[in-house]
Image (cartoon, rainbow, N blue to C red; front, side):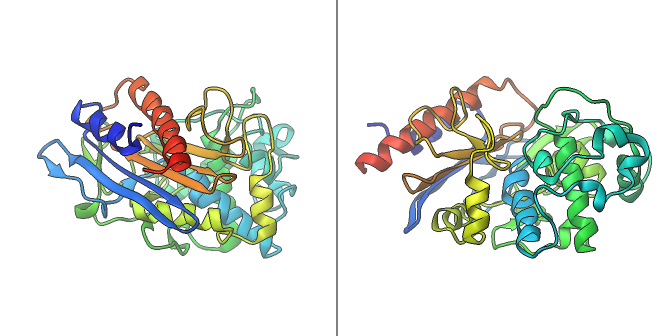
Length: 332
């Protein structure tokens, strides 16, 4: 049997990406944690250490936004089937036909017929003026697709109800929206900002909104993400009722925000039937196999110093998940 982490170390040694941090955790404790390779290769080489912060990209959706919405539900401030126009009435000015009846649940499930993305980083103005324009932008109804636009709306909903920016929400140790650049893993040499990004969000739209948004902006260490996933395994992340709702299948491929195991999913074919997971554009991913009581994390800087073909990271995620399933079942 090939140890799961040997696959990742070999991928780094083969140059598939500069560095990776990996972890495997059960409800009882950490089974393995390691870091390989470099946190940065350009303009200088900096080794990767396990305490460094990765740009988690779209893991923000499930590690932050989903939980923040469910906390609001627990507190009696929102219901999943509430219409979002109750708190964001501006959206009806230009989008009454499309958004009048859209619910919080539909946004979480990517079922609001909104576009995948929009280049709001090209909009002139401040983060606040872009938010105002975003709420008044005209959206064309399309197919239900994985939508950053929907999660940006959820982020604005959270800010409206809480009365504070997302950056001010409390986070567990190992997660932050504003890491120390000296302790952060580099991402892309950004054409927009004309520099290698380190400690500032890679996603251009999250950057344009001030660094934190409902779809991206969160940074985390491998141990920080592992502690969150351990809380999910232990049922401590939310109340039991909210956890049940989060994990309940919402469609053939999704739970509430999370991706469920299905043919060809990122967590590998040997994961249990109740497994959930999510990936991020920068090369990050985390998965939780609730039925078997194990979770695993693969964080890479796959976009450093520039974006590359997606196939290597897609395959490695699946191979890694399969190796974790075998390792957990049989032991080292």
